[in-house]
Amino acid sequence: MSTNGTERAKRRIKFNILRYKPGFIDPPRYDAFDVEVDERMTVLDVLEHIKATQDPTLLYRHSCHHASCGTCAMKANGHEDLSCVINVFDLKSDTVTVDPLGSLPLIADLVVDMEAFADRFAPLGMTLVRESEFAKECVPPPGVEAYMRYEDCVECGVCLSACPVANSTPSFIGPAGLAAAYRALVTGDRPAGEVFAHVDSAEGLWRCHGAMECSAACPSNVDPGGKIMALRRELVKYKVKRIFGMHEE
Image (cartoon, rainbow, N blue to C red; front, side):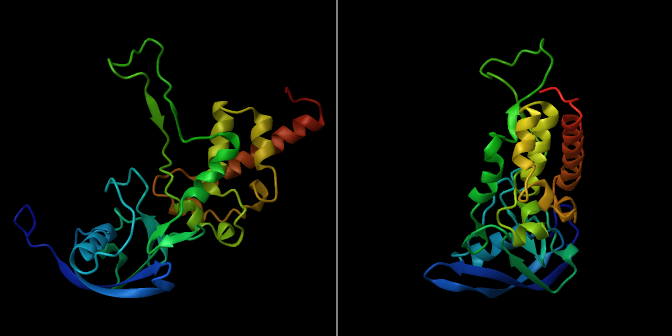
């Protein structure tokens, strides 16, 4: 029963979940679970139900349950998203296949190694968390040294998994890394020459095919594809100015 006294719609759905544990379940396989799902349940809700009632060995990541942390990203029926916001009924299928993110090393079951994703931000020392901009007259309350500004990107890895280039080119900087480079450029966090030296390569800006799958999949509306196109325009302008001696170093 729902909290307002009305009966929630329910359906039995088969979940095929990728399983992999080195030395135990190897090569990977799909295990099937039959679950009664109500209209408000998310894929993460289902995974928690399966772990609690059917298979306590199921491994996956989660934290906040409200699309803020990015840790529960995975694929449901081939589409990347945060599992805490994927409503099962919205998938409109009696069978749901759950996979880990692509383009990242698989650790176990639905858990991937995010270190390779984080490494794409490292060359310029870029981080998606930095000191907040606020009026100089603002004073933090006692016990708070400074405010921090959290960018819209939740570092979930969805854009990298959705990117067709990243799936075939592991050395590609990737959508989130390039979008972070654009942010470093426009905010002045790094000199333009340093940013462009990092992205002006066959594994950087010029490897992107402009498929825009990254922007379509992004759960936080960051639009990494749009940032990549904007970064390309800035790089072209930078090069033209250098050719004609117009650029100030």
